Image 1 (cartoon, rainbow, N blue to C red):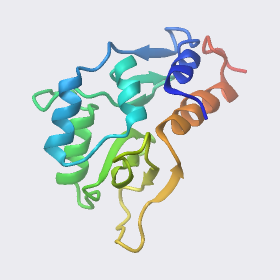
Image 2: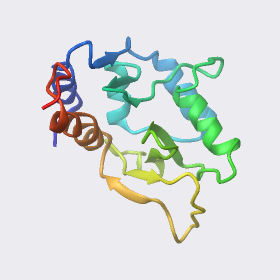
Image 3: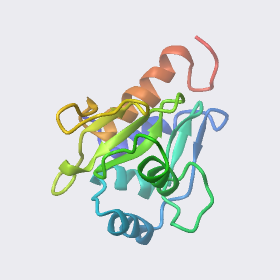
Length: 167
């Protein structure tokens, strides 16, 4: 499995026309998010935030942390609040949506497993489906790194090169 450093080495091969990286996250905002929502974010995601506070490749985005006072609609805080408090089918409290599929569904951290682990499972939340404690969202990746490696890097490189040219 790749490390976060290896992942970002690969991500940074993409042209600035294709990839967008933000400055590193402020560590106190990460801690505040965890305390406010009673979750522990996975270590690999926090290591990625230390590299770039949110990033995107060809429009596929991983959310950054900007604090509760932000009006950024695609911040981790705004999406968490919306998907837990403002929708008809709210997410389970332990899920943290960190990336959208572009169709209103989300890739989420299952933070029940983040404590004392370098990562946690990534599940796919279908926003209009009513999950139960017995019928939970499907685990689609075993880690944040595996998610980024496949969804942002591999899927992009199947259709485009590092400059954004179609294959």
